[in-house]
Picture 1: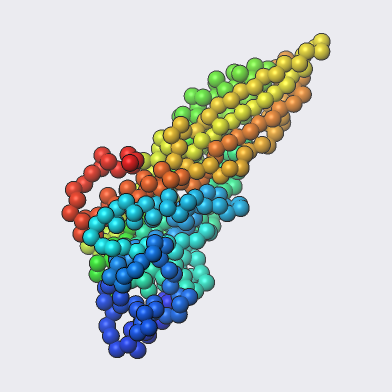
Picture 2 (picture 1 turned 90 degrees about the horizontal axis):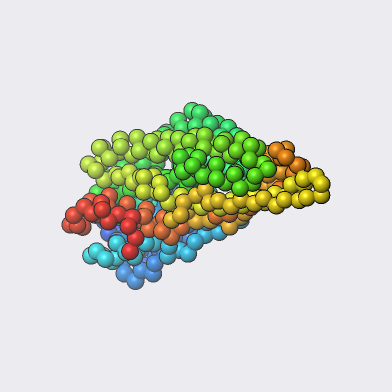
Length: 397
């Protein structure tokens, strides 16, 4: 995590050569020829075309959530205008005295190491050199081991390997060293942004937590009896497998809570030290009833003597009806035959499953909610005299 300052050093050198003193405005990073401080490759171009040096700068940094990812393998993204950074710019920031320019510096993947110490210029260096008025940061979920709860464990759930999913989540939850590292790394990152405030006293930093993309254990548990009942000849084996899902969902939820608690504790230290210029924005509660879809269909064929074959199929969406999580577009199709065998009567001769709609990243509605939450937190600190409107947050247009 040592390379973050390279771009900052280049910017400082440029200011000294010009014989000027850096100001809080975006023009401070312009050289005599009109280009940004440092080399042209050092600083990104704005996501939204900016025609004036008078524009305030908003830097959105962090991991794949900020980038607008739909899935990781292969990498796919939602429309850029649907990302929370772009919605915050268009629907909120540009409606205030401005204008504003957006720089989305996020990458997939990004963990705390690569944010501050990846290939130069790092995201941390860009956020420094751009001298923004607002920084939003979503970081931590892609850190080593922590990422497993939306990677390996996610795959286990999609394959109906619920015991493995629980074991996977427990490993993440109990890996003390990874939580200690997140605390340390995030503290160093925010401290650098705190130092940045010394030369940019109007800077506001909003650090987001994370949503739980999975359905709740309670809602899933109520759907299992009806789902398995329709399979008739394999009710006991279906039930024996599916009752393992709610405990796994409980553990996965605990991982998300621990992730948010870890981030919140770090941010709280800097909120106090910066006179309230750091904010923790937690989307967890707002996403509770807007989890992923989990549309499961199981089809079975059972042979009954003499020469009778019964088809018993069952379909159920174990997820949320009004989802804010984007489907990754990859169906789960691991055969349920091993766990449905044996049938109570007759012989199970085939079993297939399809699980659709699962994903781990927000859709446009989810990003809109994150945008609302950030705006509600930072608007007054940005100088917007708008009263609190908690009842309007995440209600859509």
